[in-house]
Amino acid sequence: MFSSEPTPTPLDPSVPAIEVEHLTVSYGSVPALLDVSFAIPSGQLVGIIGPNGSGKSTLMKAILGFLRPDVGTIRIFGTPVERTRKLVAYVPQRGSVDWDFPVTVEDVAMMGRYGNIPWWQWGPSKEDREVVDEALSIVRMADLRKRQIGELSGGQQQRVFMARALAQGAKVVLLDEPFAGVDAATERAILNVLENAKQSGRTLVVVHHDLATAAEFFDAIILLKQRLFAYGTPLQILQPELLSEVYDGNVRAFEHLRNVLREKAK
Ligand code: ADP
Ligand code: MG
Image (cartoon, rainbow, N blue to C red; front, side):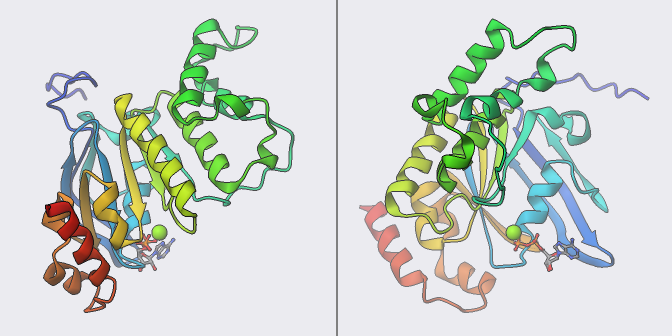
């Protein structure tokens, strides 16, 4: 069965990078996501914010095509996610992977190319190497390319995963809590990497816990608690009444947030 719709080209800026329509996902009979709809334009850095258990990881897994929705559709550049998995990549949480075997930074980034190297080819082509070089420079790991992955900090390992995702050809990269438990310098470094990837035309979706920094980090924010509560610019989303509803009146974090917004408004 073929659809009569024309297949949109991935670079058409009018086609959303991610389009989620009426998405409901359940574990057993309990819905983790209920009737969630949104569209993320290409080339944006978007944060997914919500309390624990609000369905953030479930949403990521659905966008990756790992979970089958009860209802709803997910399209990546206009094509159902089941047929475009290669365009979407995932960067796992820091320190969630143990690297005991000796591979270098460059080896891991090259793993992103394996799907592209034909079996009859002896090794990576010039193009594969160029793609890996670009990916390593976007994540600012080119200088450490010969370093063993086991010798890297958690933050650096995460950047190598990001490089692998970019080398794979992913146009959409999903990151789960990349800022959790990092110091200010690392936070800066990660933001730089995200900005670089954005400049290179990628769309980035980041699960993020900290309301206070969300306003500074993201072009747009998805506020999630089983349902989509709001989706818009930080100024539109970070309203005390709205947040109070989603976070059950736990408004202590909002004091700092108000200051951030006041600074932004100046
Ligand atoms: P978040 O990432 O926002 O903390 P999750 O997407 O992990 O939220 O979880 C959303 C809801 O789905 C929670 O109530 C959680 O307990 C439930 N859940 C998540 N994964 C599973 C699973 N594998 N089996 C059953 N329930 C799950
Ligand atoms: Mg989670």
